[in-house]
Image 1: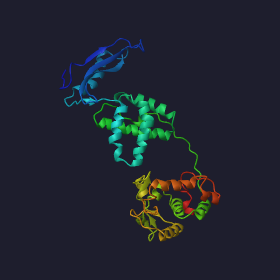
Image 2: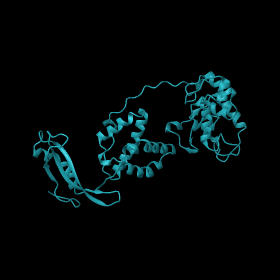
Image 3: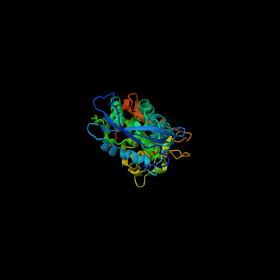
Image 4: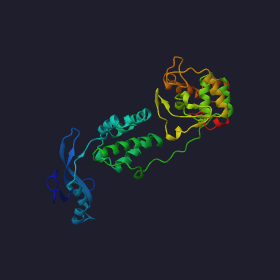
Length: 341
């Protein structure tokens, strides 16, 4: 049998004694050796074995034929040693190099999935052993603790880790969601929103700055981070358009969540009047943010402060809503009813 440089003695094909777990069903096992690159970068020859099928169903000739694809790979003239490692170890490398090119919010979400779910459950699992059955076991264990949405987010991070490992020459299995039994979609209760009349009452008793922020959120459906990150030149009052170009997240300015969010939004007549009032007293600042501190710091100094201020409209203690005598709001600020204001 031909061997390419890097392979050693001829792979051995042999029958084995009955397995301890199933003494009545002996199986054919193919054995071979291949080179593997360790974590320290050194190449080591590792002894491998693969179960080919039960002796009761396969003859030795059929078992040898089933073993040929495994031998063809290691005996190929272009064979290259693969890297081996544990998911926990590789995830640290992945965390340092891959997510860093994404938005800050995506980085934090990936880190949360790694530290909370992936490493505690899979740190010692080897990449080459994390096949479909092991992946399904992980999904089952995870879905018993968290919601379907969280499960899908964790699998998205894990799929990126395995895809990166494969492209970097590691021996591992891809994570294909079509091969896994996933949790069924949960039936969600519809969120309660402020009515148009309740929004009007809140705007009527809110102090300036917050009144403008609440009005933009209510009448355009912008997210809190998008409202806080607005700049003066994003407003085109002549054409009645508001351009959404960025978002604020934990004091950082980043791109909007999706490309569709970059489309200009129409400014209703009622909102245009509120914006003109705000611009009449607006003081320019170095960054040109529509909402800034008196000293001109960017977007409330830290945009997250503005987000928290906007979120206070949803809290029971919010004096503006208490004066207006309206109930607490769900996370989305009257997006469905804003056009009626």
